[in-house]
Amino acid sequence: MNGYEKLALLGGTKAIDSPNWDMFKWPIITDEDEAAALQVLRNGAMSGIDITMKFEKEFAEWLNMDYALAFNNGTSSLLGAFYGCGIGVGDEVICPSITYWASALSAYSLGASIVFAEIDPLSLCLDPNDSSIGSRTKRRRKRQPEGSKPYSRI
Image 1: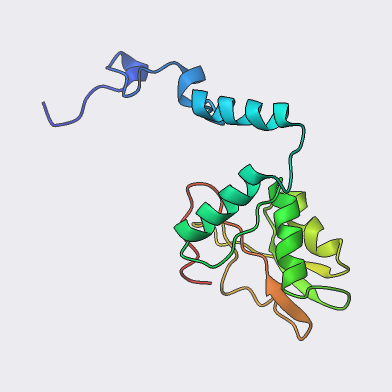
Image 2 (image 1 turned 180 degrees about the vertical axis):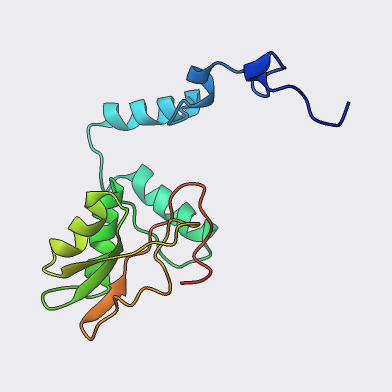
């Protein structure tokens, strides 16, 4: 044999024999995750509580930072990040042309103008050669799709 096997489509052995429901299941929730979520729900409070502060402290330590701030979702975390960077009326934020709408909404809700830029076809991140940066540009909103290359060129 030449080192190549027959494709599964043509009767060869499947490379992955796990059922689709198992392989693509997300999010992955463990018994420990479920117990922790139930504990918070039964507590009757969901923010500013001990478990949140403990998570922030441990996450900051893991990142080797002084502080960390937990948010309920990605959109609100971007809003907090843009607010912390001073984004506001009169600023421009560059976003990739292939993005979820909430990626741009966070800056827009603070009064910034959104400029959509081209993406690099290999990484699916902002194209470092795109000339969208103008005099009012304050930030480039980077997005790294799952499985893409890091932002090394931006």
